[in-house]
Image 1 (tube, rainbow, N blue to C red):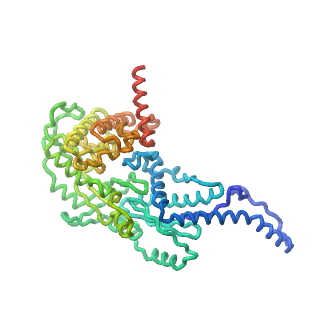
Image 2: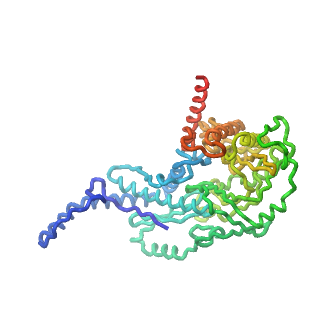
Image 3: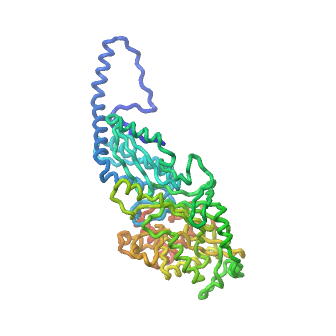
Length: 537
């Protein structure tokens, strides 16, 4: 593990040599008196600069010491995390506390890593203030890299050295804890105890999950004890490139192909003969009946599975609980049956709760923001963006009908986006649309969170992107999700062609990905006005 160190730098007005300039060589002098006078002259000339460096370093050290456990410790990691979240390109689901942040990316680029925080106060200690903050930002970037490479990793322990002080940081999926610093010059015994402790820490004590990464370089199957199935084996496929979450906190959702003998046997036991709709003679691309229900529920018969690994909030209703409600509605309504994901198995790792360390440290903490690690295995689905023409329209319309029935049944999805609209094919080749991803959904009994902003910014209703909606004054109702379906339709039609992403330029829609909620609201309103005026013209 690398430990960022804030190095002292000369002040801006100092005569430091450039890397491209070579120093001027002078012939050696052998006069002892002249050498002594030259050294004295250098001491006199360099003393103001050295005094300035000592003053700046002392101020930086005193500032961090005085704020070791104060307000700075609680807020600065959040700003670092939000800064990392706001850089780059890509689509990111957000909850209400992310809406005021600029950007919507969870992917890091090389350009992002080169950005330094230039927030300064006075001219005298500009360098020391910036360098002290840069060490924190650099530390956060290292930790974000570790979290992105290890989805199941519960926490990361890191250290920041500033002058003669060393600070221990503990990052987890909820937030960051900074411990009091140790002066390794004035408090050498305590520093030696710290080094001795680090030397004896096991691999899992550094934050690696004992099941997913029991030792460095582990890539074998994972075995999880299940109270019903016994021992469940999981072999996650990480050979292909996959999109991972880059940030310090959040759900960090990652979906990977998975193979399992135990779960494959479970699927075979649950398998039933294909119902009439599985060989439905209705040709692919035909218009669905406008006022009649389909002849029978479709069924996804694939044996391929995917594993969803994520860190949801403990206070929210879990996705398996919401899916149980969804399946209950599907059993009595054929518009929902077959149009929702088929969950094979799930497991909650209670020992990964972020509330445990805070309770152990005696911190004033509740479970409102605590997170816990989940893994859910589903039958494999395909993204709706792979479709085009009548097939895309049919799958899109089927999902709208499924969403409407679920809303009437008390299940509110509230996160309509292209990544959550999926499909699969029946044996006859017909496309079946699926409404996926319920980890941000809620049910009717959970209506107290009706004003909580959840969703993916580029596809949210314009009304939900206003300042009043961000403040919680606008309730999320059905018409907002219905508008999101329209935005998804427009998005796919303008950015994809024949199931493939168009080459750049792809129009102004790319700006929606990088905009915060109010900016995206203005961009989408302008998009509608331009289309209206172009039609009138």
